[in-house]
Structure formats: C-alpha cells, structure tokens
Image (tube, rainbow, N blue to C red; front, side, top):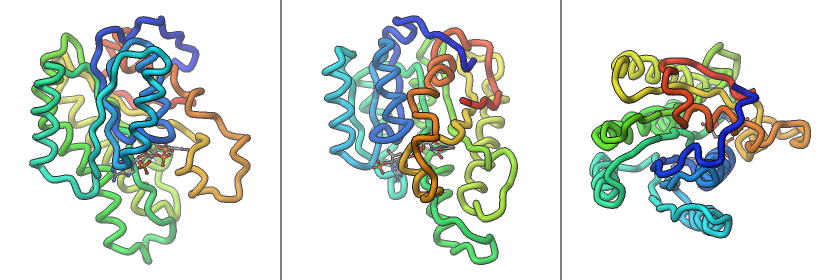
Length: 245
Ligand SMILES: NC(=O)c1ccc[n+]([C@@H]2O[C@H](COP(=O)([O-])OP(=O)(O)OC[C@H]3O[C@@H](n4cnc5c(N)ncnc54)[C@H](OP(=O)(O)O)[C@@H]3O)[C@@H](O)[C@H]2O)c1
C-alpha cells in the first residue's frame, strides 16, 4: 500500500477526526484528508496550532474543518461526551477516526522509569484513545463504513531497551486495536494500526537529537497508507498492523 495512489475525491463528504492534528504526522494527515475531500475535525491541545491548520485547509480550498481543543492528559469523561454531542449536532456521523496524538515520555532503563511518567504516557497514548472512542461509537456506526486507525511504532511490535513507557503504550495500542477489530468483525466499522516508521517530526528529533532530520522520510511521504486505510478501498482490512515505510 506504500504505492497507493488516492483519487482526488477519495474522502468526499466524509467526516474524519484526527487527534494531535496541530503538528507532525497528525497535521499532515489532516491536510491530506481535507485535500481529498474530507471535513476534518482537528483535535489537539494547542489552540493556535489547530487554528493554523484550519487556515491552511481553507487556503487550500478544502472543506471547512472544525476545531476541538482538548488536552488528552487531563480530559474528563464529561469532556469526551460533550465532544461527541457537539459532533452529533454538527455532523450527524463520523466516517473516520485517526488516533495519532502521543507523548514520548522519557527514555531510559525500565528499572528507573518514574511511575508518574508511565501513568502520564499511558493516559495520553492509551486511555485517552479508549475514552475518546467509546462516546464516538454511535456516530461511527451512523456512517455507511467507518475506519478507525491507531498509531503504533516499531517498539510497539518488538520491545527495545530504554523505550519504557512509550513502548509499553504502543504494545497496549496494538492490543486495543486487535481487541476492537475482533469485536467489529462483520460490522460496518473496521480498525487497523499504522507504524509510521522514522519520520521527520519534533517527536523523532527529541528521541534522536543527534540525527540529521534530512535523512528521514517526511510525514507527507507516509500519506499513501494513511489515505488507503481511511478510504473505501480498504473496506476489507480489519485488525491488521501496517507499516507506512
Ligand atoms: N515521528 C516518528 O518517527 C514516529 C515513529 C513511530 C511512531 N510515531 C507515532 O506517530 C504519531 C505522531 O507522532 P509525531 O512524530 O507526529 O509527533 P509530534 O510531532 O510530537 O506530534 C504529536 C502531536 O500530538 C499532540 N499531543 C501530544 N500530547 C497531547 C495531549 N496531551 N493532548 C492532545 N494532543 C497531544 C501534539 O500536540 P502539540 O503540538 O500541542 O504538542 C502534537 O500535535 C504518534 O503516535 C507517534 O507515537 C512517530
């Protein structure tokens, strides 16, 4: 699917929510989904970054997006339900949900991993995904076909020394994806995971400060798979772990 060529109107009339839409891969996914016709709900914690992405989508001639400013570290069940209620009123259905926002936490030996770091990383990378997905399920069921994409990592598929909380959270993400996919089997919903691979973003730079970012793929390079899994060409895919590179 790395060579997938999305037709221009692949996501026409689809409503897609992207978490962590203000920066990095999430920002690029939001721009790409809008460029292929989707109305994108930009969810993130930094309002100004979301406004900038909103403006870029409008400047590119895309469908008017919506903004949901929410910190996944502190969001309450009430806030997730409020968001679902607002989206029900504004859009009536949800065709796609890209769980992309994540925290890296600190790298180091598991023996010394601060438990509060583990809690924070699991809150943002795992618990928030479940807490957001639950109230959105009725909206996702209203779409003719809906796609949920979870974002994994190489260290979510094979453990690696010193990747502590982040690796644990990505294994949990794969587990959530597989569990949900089995429950969705035979329904109009599907879910899969993407491992983006090394990509030129702030998160990668903080994990590998000595690396030359110009040697890395850009978020735009990954978009064939992100588009494939969000559009109707992937209706038969469920419970699969994909690599974007
Ligand atoms: N880049 C890579 O090489 C790589 C490799 C494997 C997997 N991944 C995965 O790909 C996804 C995107 O990563 P990226 O490299 O694009 O990272 P990034 O540049 O750091 O972007 C992460 C996004 O998540 C948002 N976010 C973080 N904490 C949040 C919170 N508490 N509430 C709401 N939003 C929050 C950030 O918001 P702010 O902009 O406001 O900080 C940012 O928009 C992540 O799931 C990551 O684990 C990346």
